[in-house]
Image (cartoon, rainbow, N blue to C red; front, side):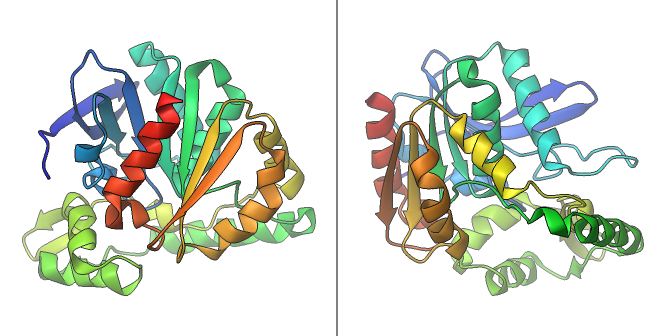
Length: 283
C-alpha cells in the first residue's frame, strides 16, 4: 500500500527542521516523532494506513535532513523540547495528536507535561517515562559526559563503500530486518567520493552529562493530564517493561496495547499500529 509523500521544511531561527508529510492540508494533523538515530522515514510504513489526517513526520535536529546544531552546542534532551515548542509556535499549532517512538516519546512526554494546551493526545510507541539516574550518580555522569565530548572531537565518521554496507551495519546493531533498515538508512546517508557516511550529527552518540533523577521523571509523568496511549512490542525494549511498572500508575488517563514485534514494531505491524492510533484519536 502506498501514499503520496512530500518533503517539508520548517525554519526555526538558524535551524531547519525537515520531514515527510502526506494527506490534505485541511485535515487534522498527526505529528510523528522518531527515535534516537532514526529519522522521519521510520514512519513511512505507517503513513498509508492513517486515514483522513495530515500526517507529518519530522527529522529531529541533528538527524535526517534537518540541520545540525552549531559547533559550540550539544544535544541536550531539553533542547529538543524547545525545538518542538518553536515548531508549534511557527505553525500556530494547538490541540495536536502526537505519535512518538522511543526517544521521541520522551521528548513528547516532557512537552505534553509542560505545554498541555498544545497537545490533544499522545501515543507512545515502545516508550514510556524517561531515562533517569540516581542522584548519587550526578558527578560521575558529568565526568563521563565531558570525557565523551573530548573523545568525540577527534573521532571521524565511518565511511561505507556502499549503501548495502551501511544497511547491514544498521541491521547488525538493531532489531530491524534489511528492508526496514533500508527505509531509515537511505534517508540517513550522505554520498561522498569514497563512499557513504552517516548524515546524523556524530555528537548524538556522546554520553549525556546529566540525567533526570527518578523523582523528576515521575513529576513529568504526573503532570501529563491529557489522554496517553502506549503501544509496545512483545519483543521490544526491556526499559519499556520496567517503565510500565514504574510510570503507568502516575498517568491521569492511560491505556496500553501490545503488538507482535520488536522496538520498531510500527514498521513491522503498520496496519495494526495505525488502527490503534486512529481508534484512540477518534475517541
